[in-house]
Each structure stands twice: as structure tokens, then as C-alpha cells.
Image 1 (cartoon, rainbow, N blue to C red):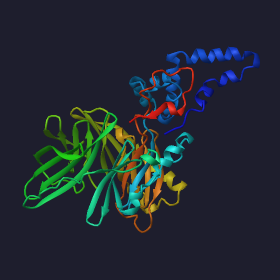
Image 2: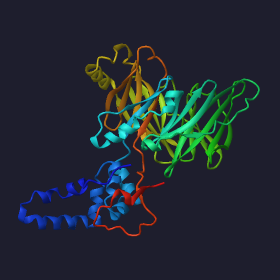
Image 3: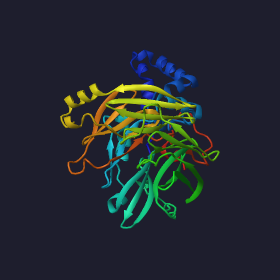
Image 4: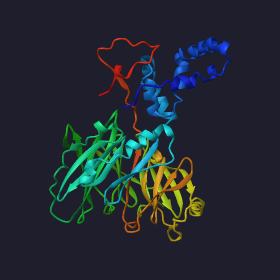
Length: 429
């Protein structure tokens, strides 16, 4: 993946020593050694390297550094200080996906961005659609006439490791008799260092108020029935239900004023009413995952105001309101392509986990809002011929946790005072 360290990490730490007059070289070297030999000080230094790919370089210095940066407690602290960074997004216009980087990015991430921009040969040979993107893995559906194939590629792998892993076709479904509407959805979930995929079918009877949800899970290369739950709804589901998987709960926006909650751990189904005065319209609200397994965010835009709600326990809490009129006005002054006639219509295309960011469509422009930084900018402009199409956005973030080098089984001892050569390590499987 990455080559052996060039000593820059040690150089940065020892820089102050290099500035000392020549007679003080020995003293400065002793000072540097005193710092780097102190495990507590070394950990605090490594916590401030900012990027996971730099942690991998640090792991190549010696066995002791590898043990520090791969420690679970260290990684937990590192992620809190440096959450996985948004590198860009895949946009699917119906004519094939493409990757757009979020610029500018620090120079340390230039190689990572280049790898994310990679387009597999299979996307060129057949019509492709992105279905899911999480933790560096892009799930696509490849169409070849009436046939299709599911495949996953890991965008940040080396060229020799970028082969697409194929999935079995989605489960066959026998449509019941009568008037029914069926919505297929695919969601993923991080489990340790791996991903789990769930295929969800929402079946609604137009003659009754019954809604049935069938959940399949990909296990050992086979789609297995995970749960089948049914409930009564006071109204027909939305034309485009949105799903969010938080721990073992699936939140589904099946109706304009409520959310269906499927708890897979206990095979139960319940309903959450939306906050008073809030209801789903045309892409004006979307759910967002929360770190807390018992919570979920609801992000709503209305008349250039963004409302962020958090459902915790049995209550909704309005955690933030962002007034976007001035942001949009400033954006128009900076970029003439943001048309006047569309400034009052914002549609939500995608939201980040923990309500970190929002992608909007406004006319032919796609806008990105950093919720924490309260900044809005244009990140994409649609072509004249298809700007009215429905676009799908799939954010691409830095992979977590980093994949550290593993010691070869026959290597028993590493000198902690020397930087090992590249041959002494091999990538973890």
C-alpha cells in the first residue's frame, strides 16, 4: 500500500533539535530520545497526525509504534479527534455513476483521492448504477439488457486489488394477488471491520392498510430471510420510502407523518409520530443515523430553513435551526450559475451520519452544507439536458479503521530502534 517511512515523522519531532547550534547536537538528540522513549508522550504525538493514512506510515517505523497506533483505545481517541473525512461523492444520474472529489483537500490525501476517482472497467462495459457506498466499498448493479449483476469494489485498494467481488442476485419474490405496491431497498451496516448488507422489500396493499416488510441478509454469499414483519398503516406508504439502519433497528419513512421502526433483535414493529407540524413532502426531509443505537436524526428543509431533530427515548428534540437565506444569497453573488428562479426550492438529496452534512439540489446545482461549520457551497452543476432528472448522491468517506501492516509469522523480533524494511511487512489479510 504505502512505502517505507522516509523519516519525516521523526524529522518533525526532532526539528527543534536541528535548530540548535552544533555543540548542542548531542543534548538535542538526547532530548528527542527522551521524548520518543516515553510511551505517554509518543501516544500524544501520534494522536495529532490528523489522517489515518499517516497512521499507517507511523506503524511502519517500528514494532513499538505499530503496537501504539493499532491499539483499540488509541484508535477510539483518534477517531473522536479526527472523524472520517468526506473525500467526495458518487453521483448517479441514471446514465452511469461518476466520482466528484470534495476540494480542496490536504496534500496528504492526494493519493487517496486519486484512488477514489478510479472507475472500474466493468462500469465502462455495462450500464452501472451505485446502490450503496460505505466505508470505502461501492456496491453497484451492472445491467446487460434484461440481466443484471451485483458487485462490490473497494475503491482505495491498489490496482491489483481492485477486482469486483460479485454478489448473488436479489431474492426472487412472488407478487401476491390483488393490488399491491412494492418498494425494494438496500442498506448496509458496519460490523467491526466488515459490512453487512440487507435487502428490504416493502409491500403495501392498495385494498387494505396492511404493510409487510421482508428483510433479507447476505450471509456466506446467499440472501437469507432475516425477518418478515407486518403492520397496519393509516395511509399508503410514500412513493419513495427512505430507510436508515441504526444498530438493530430499521427506521422507514412509510407515511407522511410517521416512521415505522422494525427492531430486528426482538422481531417487533412500532411507529414514531413526527414532530408536531412536520411531515414528509417532495424530498424535503430525510433521516440520519446517530451513534446512539436508540436515537435517530430527522433533517427537514422548509422555506430556506433547515431544522435538525433528534429522537431519543420517546421524545423529539429540536437540536438546531439554520437560516439559509443569507447563505444562498452569498452563494449567488459568488457563482452566477446559481439561478435566481430556483433559490427558494431546496430538495434534500442525501444527508451524512450524525447530521454532519446535507447535499441539496437547487435548480441545476448541487449544494453541500457543512452543518457544524455552517457553510454552503456548490459542488456540482448538472448538464442542461438532464438537470431536471432525479439525482442520487452517495458520500464517500475515509475508510475506518485503517488496515495496518501485519508481521510475518516467521518474524519473531523487530529492533525497536531501527526502521524495518518494506520486506519485513506484508498487508493484513
